[in-house]
Amino acid sequence: MHPHQPPSRSRLPLLITALVLLSAAVYFGWLYLQPAQQAPAAARPALAPSLSAAPAAPPLFAEAPAAPPAIEHPVEPPASDSATLPALGDSDALLSDRLLALLGRKNLLDFLQLDGFVRRVVATVDNLPRSQAPSNRWPVKPTPQRFLTGPGTGGSETIAPENSQRYQPLVQLIESVDSAKAVALYRSFYPLFQSAYQELGFPDRYFNDRLVQVLDHLIDTPVPNQPLVVTLVEVKGLVPSLRPWVRYEYADPTLEAMSAGQKMLMRTGPDHHQRLQAKLQDIRQRIAGP
Image (cartoon, rainbow, N blue to C red; front, side, top):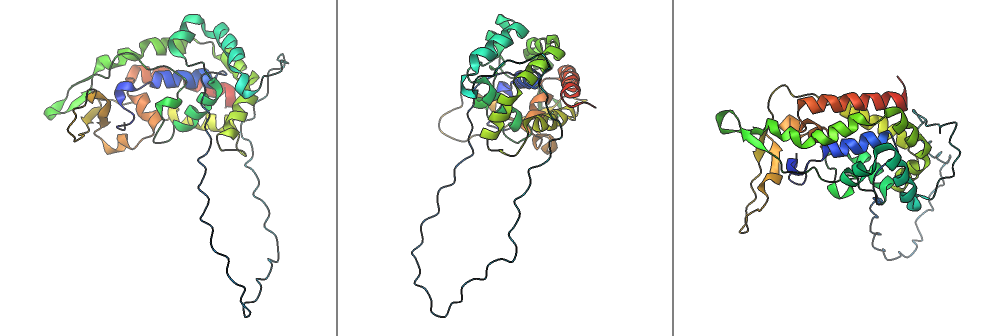
């Protein structure tokens, strides 16, 4: 956990919901990410040509451009799906209709951010294995209630067992999703995900390969066998924090060094952690094979 990624606002189940529903379907949100543009280097004054300087010799051989990596997990559209997809920026209405049929209106309104959906999903998937997964890019709504801690040994604090109850509705939703239908939906809309991934700054990469990598990364997250000890990060200043619970970190440096997605997954509690991983394994099998 990072001060900027507080456990109290952890939306892992929501994120995992997004990932699961996304990896299994064409889901959530709008996040138009473009790679940061580098500022142009300051122009240098032109140098007067030197009478003694010899012109540089041309290279003997031109360097061949690097070949894009081979696709490991190609996505084939369903044979029965011949619909023409809208442009990426115009896809929200169609996606919402398809998600409505899959999840129901209440679940859509309660859990998902449907504005600009594909870009949000792609950005979130790509960020989960990194140290930061900014919440303003997530395709899901915040987990309700605040993060809860309890007393540990030697005056330490641990994540309270009842904290996992915050995630119960989302875990139940994830488990209730028909994986086969969700994956078929994802395959139908895959060109939009690929377009958003290229737009994100990966023109030669394949989004489904990245999705499989992220699923494997989350599936490999160890399930804690004891309460997780956390510490409150001190913030010095004249203005007191009105929400101190957003500044917790794992006390174990090894756990704190894990990715944003793994830390959020562990915060859901051992039971939810294992149930979510089982669903992710099911989705992984369907989109990538053995």
